Image (cartoon, rainbow, N blue to C red):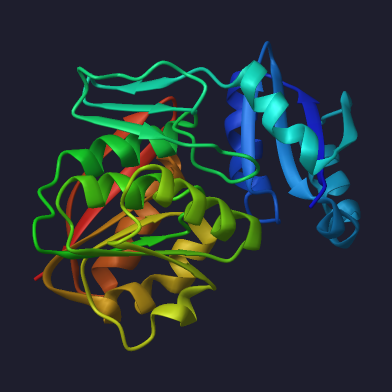
Length: 275
């Protein structure tokens, strides 16, 4: 599968806003370097939303931007040159196979990100990784919704989860999570699934991890609540600090209890509980 790389010259503040906006389209991974936001979308999906994306950029006064097609076979080489390891609080290391191991870390996670979102470089994945690693999942059933590379599912499994369903709507993400689960030795407990919230109908979980975006969280939260066992946590990210109140209000309207939130670089993670 070929992807399109959209490069946008913008400030850090505007970059955060554009990531949140573009995540509502089929852009499934982002990177920032030297004042340039890079957003990636499947080539076949670009035509469907090109005019709306252009209108979005015009609304924010973005003039400097361009599109480049990236062939699938070049993606690994691109990441090998641009993907440094991520260290999360001295507990979780997220690295590619070509990096040296982190034997002193409790969880040394190997991820070949390809085109899937979830390398730990984005603040929301970092926040979710930190929150997930702080839990004891022994004997629990966990859902990683919008799983991308499967990194959160892998961390949950390494934290003792009995089983983890890793659900993503993108076929490339599904294939990548299968590969990453195998690489990290958790294929016996993590089940990658291709689909949306309808894929969890009739299933029940002790913890649900959802790192998606504001609009999908608001729309699909009733499905998560229905699938969440009593006493279980729904942990959500993919949202800006300014979105916390909307997420909290929606969660409380569905009977969830707000337990707290954490922040990094203008992004947030929200923890709720079903009592």
